[in-house]
Image 1 (cartoon, helix red, strand yellow):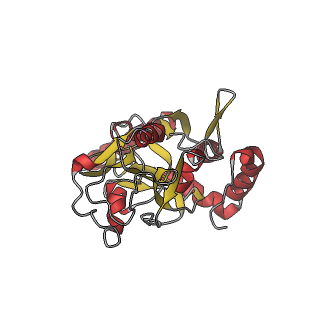
Image 2 (image 1 turned 30 degrees about the vertical axis):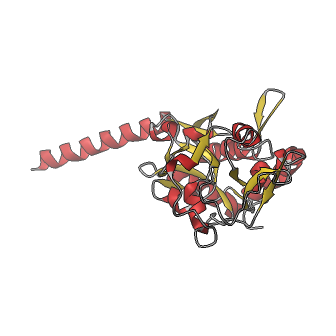
Image 3 (image 1 turned 180 degrees about the horizontal axis):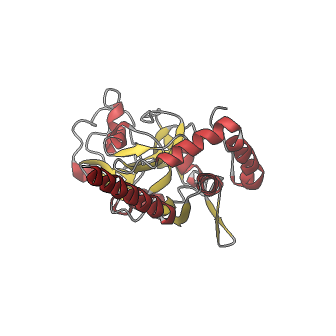
Length: 278
């Protein structure tokens, strides 16, 4: 009996040491998707820069974790199919990446994904986009029979549109062929320009750089963002508790806010940053 207990204790210790060693050697992959040419993330002189990258590196360093950082397409993190709710993209689901930074929280996404602590605050509106002057007389209160464009991987999808079904006629009867998902907003604007879609649904901050003489937003806010935070997303089987614990500790100690304020100076030429708790 004594020898068996000693054996079990020794075995448990060996397993514990192996797990500790494996965690020490583990490399975490944190992905960003260049959702905008803004202070969050951008390319300058061939280098990936921005607050999300600064924050990811600092959290990993503070937590004592080995991390690598990748730029991926948004659809690698979250993707869509017509008639289907958004779900984890192949890089996140296939474990090529452990986390994707820079995402909003929506009811549909919470079904298949977990969220980190908030990284930043960002407020905005979800609006329809049409050609300037609305030459095709698109009615944002009645989309019956209309074809709507959505950016693949972005929360402004059919599920988002359902939030306004009581205010917008035709949402309930919308068929899969009326949903057009494309990889980039530039492709969707080309579809709109050439009348392949009647309108596209977009976050105002996301589409702002393209609203010059050719395009404009129309109608009221669809209102499908749960909170005004921007988060990291992760699989439900991979809590990455160390990331959240470290980020919360940084907020408590003031290190997060020091980093955020520093980023305003370094990346402020790319736009405004609003720190959490401000």
